[in-house]
Each structure stands twice: as C-alpha cells, then as structure tokens.
Length: 187
Image (cartoon, rainbow, N blue to C red):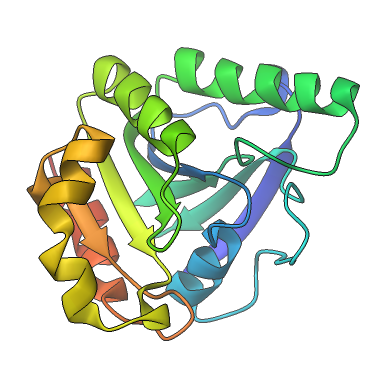
C-alpha cells in the first residue's frame, strides 16, 4: 500500500535513512500524479489539468521502498523565479540523493518531444537504472504503440526492454511498473 509521507522544498527536508527510492519524472501533464494514484488505488497525489502543479519533491512510502514524485520539466504556467526554484530542487534531488536507485521517466505516448529525448539522454548518462513509462496508451490502439516501439526507443536513446507501455487512467499494464520496482528493490 502506498501512502503519502511528505513534501520537501530543500535537501534539509528529505527523509534521512537508507530506503531505496524510485523517482517519477516527466514533462508537466504526463500523468505522474495519476500514475501514483493508480498505484496506490487511492487519491493520494493531487492531479491537475494545469501543467506544473507538482512543485516540490513528494515522498510516498510503498512497502519496502519509496516513490518520489518530482516536479515536471518543460512548460508550466508559473513565474520565472518559481521555475528556477523547481529546477534547483529537482537537480538537488537527482544529483545528491544517495537513496535514488532508478529513474522512471514518464512520457505522453502520443506526444514525445525533443525535450523528452534530451532528458532521456541525460538520465542514461547519469543513472544505471533508467526506464521510460509511456503513459496514455488508451488514446489509440495498443498495436500502434507496439509497432512503433523501436522508433520510439531510438528517438529516446533507450533499449526497447526499458520501455513500459501503460495507461494510468485505465490501469493498463500498471502491474509491469510495480513488478519492475519490486524486482529492482531486491537487487
């Protein structure tokens, strides 16, 4: 069972222990909060149609590990100062967090951007465990996504085996995300 623990605006507010953490990051409005709610089978993360609502590092306990919801990258309707604060918070977490074991980069399966590819390259270089979650596959036929998986993997500079196709809204393949986290937490 997943439960919300806390939000943090700086490194001093992080939880100080050795528990494994998996972070979810992606462009604003890719469905990170919806995915967390689906994993929890409960509304524990605030969702919004307005991009950029997640502005802190959010910690969720999930049995033997934690899920971290990071602010989205890319477009959001917030001030330049707030954008700078979010970049600082996100960089602090990504570059300094010893508990971080894997990055799950969420992308909208229907709108994969050059910024997604740029961030994917960054994550590939910095982290051994980097996975792409293509969300919102409920918008078109599943075969469309499966037929284009190699092209998507090439565009994002990842292996096809590191891509998980899901619909957080319809709970499609959510078990694959959970299985991957459980598998990694045992390494």
